[in-house]
Image 1 (cartoon, rainbow, N blue to C red):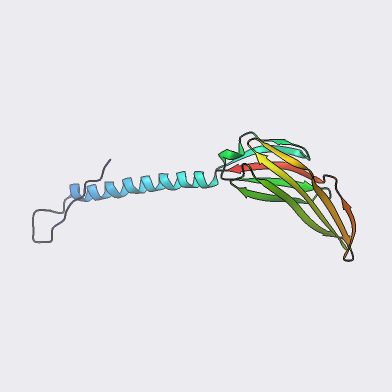
Image 2: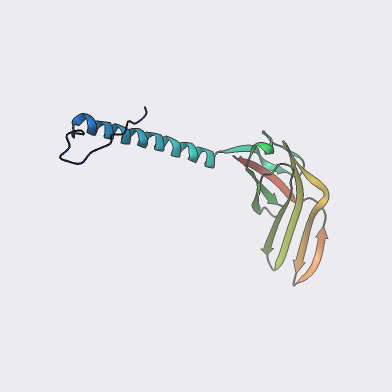
Length: 162
């Protein structure tokens, strides 16, 4: 319902008397505006917080991930992943479709630093690892002890946000 505004005139004019009808018109207008504002706030919250699980695998995979919906349909996605020492991490990618992303984690255990990395491509409904773009670096006492090129990062979950 469109609000009909009253152009009030100062007392002693009798052109705009204060009546129950005039006051109820104001009340109805305020109530209508409050209802529309509450509805709009709810719609904004839904848009800002709308998320969709695109992939979920409790065991994780080091291979290709097939998403339930194209990455192109989301403002950003979040990739949740685990390393060989069971350390979890995540990365958020804005406008993810067509991007390459580095999944990286660094951990420190028992005087040893473990860096693990993996590069993946995001294209439509596919997240695929780049061949030869995985590594584990192990450093003890400031020296590089080992660099291993096996894949030690498992993708467990991908969430899309609109």
